[in-house]
Length: 454
Image (tube, rainbow, N blue to C red; front, side):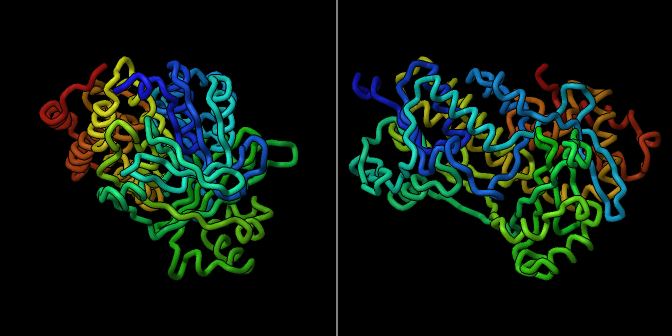
């Protein structure tokens, strides 16, 4: 490519988590970066309530934040979560640890809080931030990206080294579909979500255990709660959009109070503004985006949710997008062949993002239903026991995804499938850990699971 192309500014479209982190990384590598965002600067204006699922930060995301040099600013905003707290209908509690080592925890973090930290870091790194500049399309024949300015006037910029991080509803992805004919599916779940607040007690203390991800599994739907650093919890109801127990039936304070009193009586009494918040906050939609092409020559690359949005049920949406940024940085370092780097990124990441999308859907079924099955808890306990006995071969799938940033999602998915077959075989005739045939377990593990890297 010409010197002008190589030394020109990089354009990032979308100042959400992925776009802002990518901008920081690129700026720290010495590139001139312009970051366009359709919304106002969230550090200067209030964001709408009820529109952001609390996030779980895990190993893959932490590694990318460390690469960008911002982890020291993020750490004070984190609440460690070593496991799930399950609430049954009677109010009884069951704690299920995520792992068995002290470092095997995930961290609750506020999406807007983290986004503001990244925006501050982007400014410090020299990124030019352009708010209220929505991308409105592109011309892949003339190689232009189209924006509006704050006054609503359209303007074009050259399509040269453009990174589209404009989210699941990406304008630039949909323009690629329309103009280039790329294959893409956008599959919406028949379930939606609603965010609510569980406030702290008047003295600031949390009303439920702060160091757990709380789940109220109810079969076809569930409630979860993630802690915030101020002692409050962000509570999210995942529920069918239509049907008998669904968002379409919860339209009055009485129907909301009755529904929560029936299905979540223990938490209902801790949420004094439940009905008012429920009616004020929007119902969010969720889905999976799978695009078979992410790049156009050396000019434009989809990254993050714009390329591969997933449902939130494995706590990996943000982590996966952050891992995108880190792996793309590795491919771009020292390379002038951006087209090749884009293709390599797409080829490597596509099977892995497909794998985590599938695992996220599976985890929803587990969280809302399977966790109520005694066999589930036996499998979890046996997984940890087999990991203790065979630490280089048997690592629970959840641990591979959340705590091992050196294991690709596709590998975790396939090994998890094999491990589930082993667990099922071992528990056909055993209902406790003491009655498991560990000699048979060792034979199956050694035959089917090659050692993982240390």
